[in-house]
Amino acid sequence: MEWQYIKYFLKVAEYEHMTKASQELSITQPALSRSISKLEEELRVPLFIRENKRIKLNKYGRMFREHAFSIQKEMEIAKKNIEEQLHPNQGEISIGFFHTLGINKLPSLLAGFKAKYPKTTFKLKQANKTILIDSLYNGDLDFCFTTLTGEELGRNYKSIDLWEEKLFFNRFKSS
Image (spheres, rainbow, N blue to C red):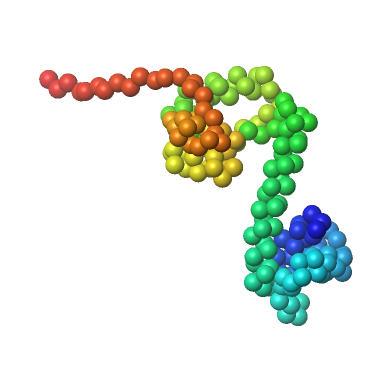
């Protein structure tokens, strides 16, 4: 199966219209139709219900679309990983953090990193612990600052102690 077939399929599934999809993909409509037909032949099932000029995904098409999205996401990750290996001093880093770190700690950490790797950009996500961990598990974050250790997150995660903070309880004295 060719990667291009998957890319074409996803665009046709998005528009449910061959001509619009072919224009978006900058290929001819007959070439796109042939690619979709070859994909269907390879899978040995039709993926669309064809109604005049409109087409709709059938049950096999809906099933295949979910897998095609996963394949597309994995390809994007693979390309990003290769690019990072080719150009290790540049790229985008997705970081999650608690709002309390955004005031003092994170700006100085990022400034120090940016001074050493000026071509790096940051995608920042400020949220609570639950959202940060979900984002880490989903691959939306490269890493996050949290109170959980690697053991608590699972065996595929590693944690590094960065600092300890003291908490104080202050009480207002009334006169």
